[in-house]
Image 1 (tube, one colour):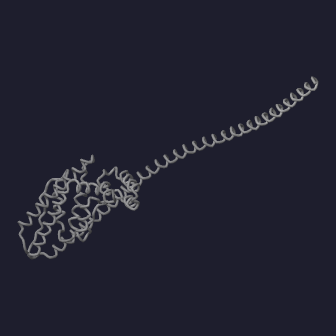
Image 2: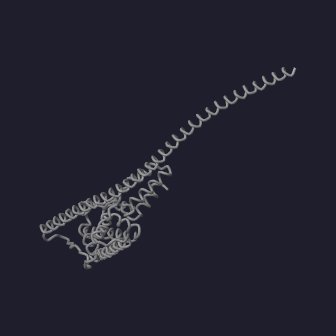
Image 3: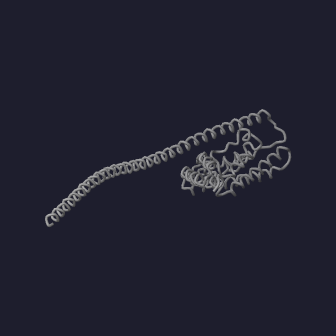
Length: 315
């Protein structure tokens, strides 16, 4: 297993198991001698809930994501053509309707992803998934990031993209998606005229839209950062709990080893005492044996003396 395969497994895991799976895979890489890959995997942060759901949709219902991206491209092209003086209102309306349908399908895919994961299909989360895919539709770099299925946090297309050619049309299309508690509405179709009759009103409208888009982007970024902070706090709590468990286990092992060492030391002391007693007993027995041997020699000498005396008397 390499870093790429481990990363795929990690981002395919349930959100609640992210930290546990990351720890397991990093340990497996380390056991295989891939220390750099292990360290790199450990540095991957736990995704926010909305980023994780977005990854889930990309991995489980990629067709809905790609259909949305294609519809947004076609809608943007159609609008650009009309603003350049070409195309037709009918073609634009057809593209807008296709985009609305793609948004509805993507919205339902997000809801189903949440339900399949055992979570409530919260409207805020569903809208964030759609917002992430919309951001990817506006910025090429974001699109590539989205399609990896490995988002850590929500995507931000940037204010410039939100205020660009596609403008409020994507917002109108997303607003037309069928969400819980929302009525299905037809997408708003911008009025494109060859010449503006009222330049001041048009500039004021554009300024209002720019302000609303900027404010919306600011709110989304604030919400994203708050969600990231909450997820990181939860991840840190889980890591702290795991560390506390590991510390308790290490202490238990240390205590058991200390008990074993103390028992071994006591056994060594007893063995030393036994050896010393045995040595003393051996020396005592050696002394007894020496005395017995000396006594035996003396007895032998006395017997020989008596035998000589008897032989003399008999002579």
